[in-house]
Length: 281
Image 1 (spheres, rainbow, N blue to C red):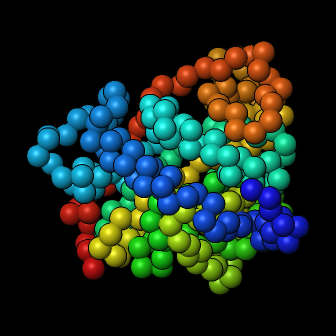
Image 2: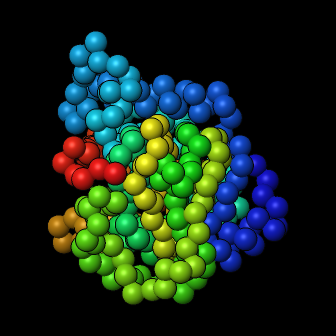
């Protein structure tokens, strides 16, 4: 996937870029089918138990807001994390050598909440500001079903905003909310099935509640420059300056720290939500 100079400049300036149709329809259908397999508990994972055979695929998926690290248990999603088109684009907007440290499969059924304002760098602290999300739309993402909202250019200063608990549990999940900035410049990022949204780890973004009657499924993976250490988890006696999280997957180029090997941090885990517990609209 060859990006144009205008696309690369737009990403640098705005902090996000939509690449239309980067994932082919057949690949999207296969990813949707794999999401069903995961939610039905067809992969060995203590956090994804098998469901009764009579449960519908829709009901099985409706149990979950998000599956974290599904690529650890699904060989197919592991391949999709390193999708050639995505890898080519990342090599142009990050660096020639790119690694992935996280995947997240958002199911986001009807009535399920979004996530309040945040910056991904707060949760995944890179050392060189190269953190980049790759947001693969498995359904059309619209304002009605809870698409992304972003504040263009909010990544440029490299400033991490403070967080506090929000007071809107019917709109957002329980994760904290970033604050202290002007929200008036926010825009919705609506996109079609198969589009990929790339966004900088410092970009302020959020999503709202799914007010439609259909799922808003997304596979979002997080990537960074493979030449940067990743102090995401500190072992006993480790220092942030030298800590290097090694549960990674190379997606482009070479791993300069391959001599360290890789370490599995376990299987997938899940984020559930019970919409009956909240006031619905």
